[in-house]
Image 1 (spheres, rainbow, N blue to C red):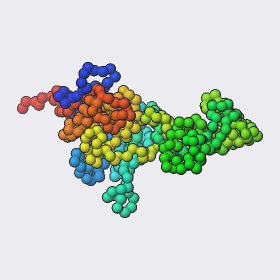
Image 2: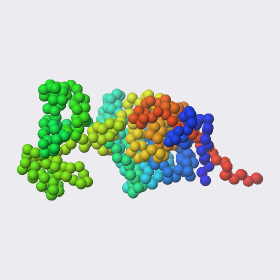
Image 3: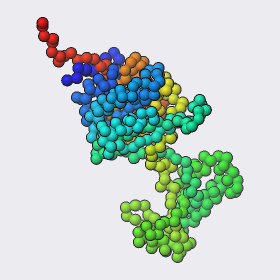
Length: 424
């Protein structure tokens, strides 16, 4: 039996004022102490229950920071990571996901270690996270300027793993440069003009004036396209030998009757439309619901270059130089791997970003951090989230206004089941 246990400190626990509200989360846990001791104490209750683990361990760069030492002997660093990762694997649910945030200093060794513990087949992705820009003092150094970290993603068991489908916003695709003037008319009567011509008509301008406007205020043209996405199109020539016999027949018909649009009806998918042997592709098909808006999007890739870590000094209302991660990053991690109500664990809590975002997204959470800043930084930040006093980060996107609470624990030695020393 492990000689450590978790002891709640009620005076440091916190909950929203007023009566409990159905649906709010109150059993979240903030634990102060060594994270390996805390993990072993958590295991009897939480083995197989955690849906998402996100950790941002020390990168072992050899430097010392205000809140932690980031330089220990390499073999010891690996041994310490192995001990913790083995328990984390046991805590994960069968369909759970592990995210490890790391830089390139120990990246290769950590991948080998994780492959050994989780199985190489369960390595889901190695994400490149752009965390800075090639500016400042780093930019004067010769060679490549480092602007990225990495997020290693492992499934507990890939046979059960079912991540959510996410999309990221992208700029308007300029290939969609034609417009169906009479979209509401029967399809055989559709008339195509250039997108610029349609934009000019909508603005009451000539084409040259509309072109100047689009260059000076590109957002105006973007708004026009989004508002009429079902009429903005481009033409694409299908691979004649790769499509179905029905599609080939329709392509042939559209070439024989070039002045009208032809439709191929399909039972389980959107209908195909052809004109002059080419397929009509609609811009509306590229739109995805992102942050409550239908905008151009593409499936999430392994290059995360849209969540920069700059200007984070005020996020969460706490200062954590060189270590704070953006709430938008944790939101992506949690939306990729969990649903509301799923347990989230972070045993290198840092400034408390994981708990803050999990709380706002209504995921129950467990955080572990050692040292005085567990109370001074992490607990302070989470109290503000609970009380609805934190407007930063993902608050607005999550629609968060406050609620719930958390329990504060310390890791202490358990003497209850230890046999007394025999008398001499």
